[in-house]
Image 1 (tube, one colour):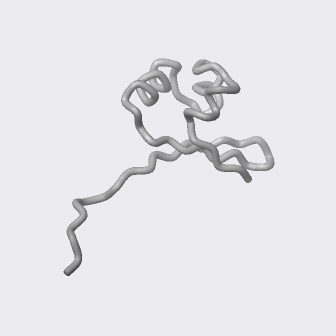
Image 2 (spheres, rainbow, N blue to C red):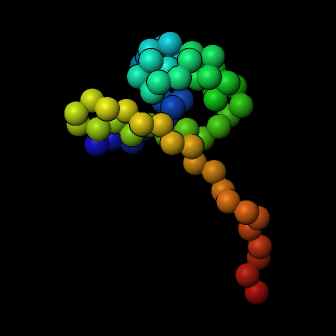
Length: 64
């Protein structure tokens, strides 16, 4: 299993290829990139690929 940021994976593949692998449209991949979303791909040994978005939940507060 390997984890790789979408931006790094797109250095090796086209947006259309990535879209087909994760089951979305090329336009959806373009929007992810354009918006600067933190998308991480998990590439399993059997060839499956999953995409996950990494984002903060809630607001962080300073701890006193």
